[in-house]
Amino acid sequence: MATQRRREKAAETETAVEPIGAGKSEAHGYEFGGPIGTFILTFGLPFVCYAFVFLCNDVTGCPAPSLLSPSKLFAPPALSTQSPRQYALNTLKRETGWPGLGGLINAEAMLGTLAWYGLSLLLHVLLPAQEVEGTELATGLCAAGTFVLGPNFQLWTFINTHMVQLLTTNILFAYLLATYFYLRSFSVKRGNSTHRELAAGGHTGNIMYDFFIGRELNPRVTIPYVGEIDVKSFMELRPGMLGWIVLNLAYMAKQYKSYGYITDSMLIVNFTQALYVLDALYMESAILTTLDLTRDGFGFMLAFGDIPWLPFTYSLQARYLAVHPVILGPWYSLAIMAIGIAGYIIFRGSNNEKNVFRKNPDDPSVAHLEYIQTASGSKLLTSGWWGRARHINYLGDWLLSWSYSLPTLLSGYRLTNSILTPGSRLVTTDGMKGWAIPVTYFYLLYFAILLVHRERRDEEKCRKKYGRDWEEYVAKVPYRIIPGVY
Image 1: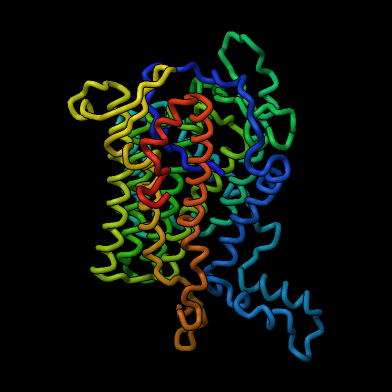
Image 2: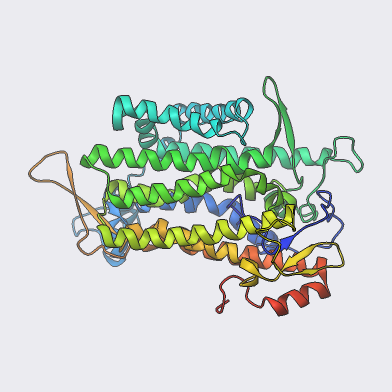
């Protein structure tokens, strides 16, 4: 599932710009398992989001204790009148803090979500992305409230109190958004004066598959008093990625409110992930060359990836640390930061090199680079960063993701009621260490699969486009992502 919005196109450096949608006549096979795979993803991904929320929770622990003893979970006490199934279900509801179906959504969360999207639109119009003020104002609002009220600032308490309901609201909004633009895409006519295009692989005729992939390439809407909005580019960066940072800050405020301090692990997670997002905003113009904008339609894949998936699953580490504060110490902290900084240097250095070369191959900083001149007029770099691997920027991206997960160390904790202080709970790792790694290390594992999948998609496209030139390029740069390994 393609959810990282600013993935800049790997080894390719165009000298001639193709019209968007130019590849719509190419033959496209099914991806993501075809109709069956996209059906599973469309209706299964919300359950994955909920699983992270409930199975790793602030009621009993991470993971829920009964999950570590499944045989006991289906063994009710001798005097119990419940069946094994009822007993297991009720135990899980109690341990995960299940609010009931009616508790999954409320009016406050819906109004809060609408306010967030309204603010995002307002800042998008009043403060263009290329201007630094756009980021400073959004951050400044949160900073001012935190300065006055500390962790009791209403924004932080609202998020931590309504987190499940906010997730549900954004899931529903993703379905509505995808449905609206799927139906609207049938008004796209060949040769229309508004230059609307269908995505190359998004109009196969299979309803389920096209709904997931997206039929229209770059849908736009005109909102009164706001103007015309490119929906895909707006959703790529505004509500979701900025929402990721806001959630992280809310969890940091929760940690401080609960324990009276902020751990080095929480600071590292917030810093490295904020660096990732702010880099995306600062380099926003580079998004125009990404696979998402140039090839993928706007369907459920991007709508769900932008709105609920990105902010609510990528902030898992901060949510974990809010309940279980991990103190790394100076040596662990330095090692983790070194990995993150190394990843960022590779990612940003390689993409900057490519972008400079694309704009001006004679620039002194890139004039020495070797390349293959293709028959289509493009240049494929074979030295510098891009001579080490064909998608070397993906390696940097992945290394940076290690700095998100490593601060949680051997994750896993249990919450128990305190005997000495009624109403409070104690956090312990006894018997829990390592059992929550699939949760707090999810981003790292998922991102590796995502990047390999994206690399394969890009390779296939380039092989079709460049033919023999691509084969020559592969011979000169044999490694895909990791030099000497893969």
